[in-house]
Image 1 (cartoon, rainbow, N blue to C red):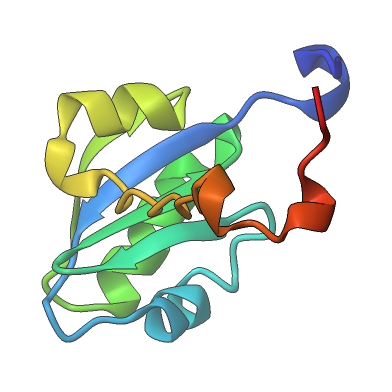
Image 2: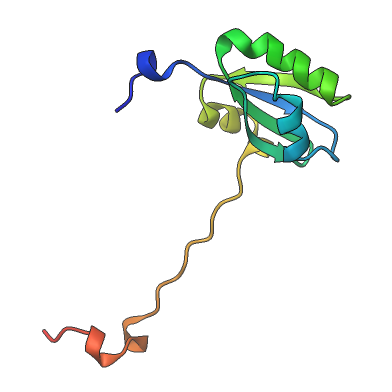
Length: 112
């Protein structure tokens, strides 16, 4: 397991953005911040990961590049941020249903 002293601490900052803002526009806005990475962007919200020391620079870059955007929360983990604000939660992936054993060909079923 990689420890934080090697990987470095990170902060996830949530922004309210205009509904027409997309991921590409957010990535362009934060391109000046070296450690910034857009996690999600859409439906009026954006989550961006950065170093704690670059958080103020990130907020300035987003607010100046995308008018109407504003930071509304920050957290050390993405899970905590999504728990506090359910609108930031990523959509659940649908699990593929397995076919019942009766639908499998006979050669795949082992005799008892």
